[in-house]
Image 1 (cartoon, rainbow, N blue to C red):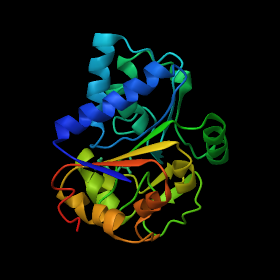
Image 2: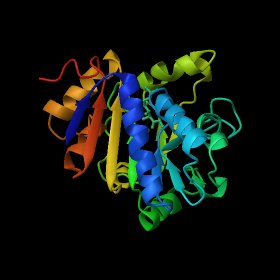
Image 3: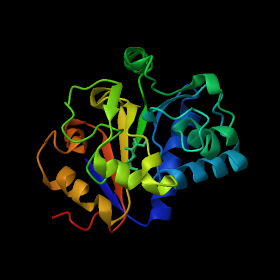
Length: 234
Ligand code: F6R
């Protein structure tokens, strides 16, 4: 596992560059995408690159990690809306090639991911160590499916909603096994509230209580951290 510790703005540029390099070399690239606060700067850089260099996303396929259950896909806080607003509306991606897990299709999502094979999977991490919405205690063998969100996740995500009562309590998420099937994984973590999870990943053992520790098994992971997220590493 490679660890990069740098300024947030530098990391955003580095990760975006890896993505555009992949897409330029392989017009049929398959990307695994995350939402939340962490990847916003990466998407900004991808949009900037598209304006400047017209990187072609016409034949790129994307799989998002997760979507809330109980929010209409057009709700302002749905992950469908997030992706359109922050990336898809600003590049020439074909929306038919963009995929999200839904309650109706969990098994077919896993099947399609296997068929297409993700080239680069972008991951954020929850303060409790979740990746996707695979909360602590999730089996390392999990595939795409319905999950109940942990109290700490609801607490962390309330900043995006008017009140904590508005935060959905469940979601559909890509499973840990699906995430691990990606050829390359880039995990990004910024801020002090990610430091404990990062310490578990770097210094701890594989442990289902800390879902991100499954990444220790993956042959090609890069972890991008700001100083605060790296502050508890021994
Ligand atoms: C989002 C996702 C989550 C987030 C995590 C961190 O698609 O799968 O695992 O990456 O909750 O969220 P932020 O980036 O908002 O701190």
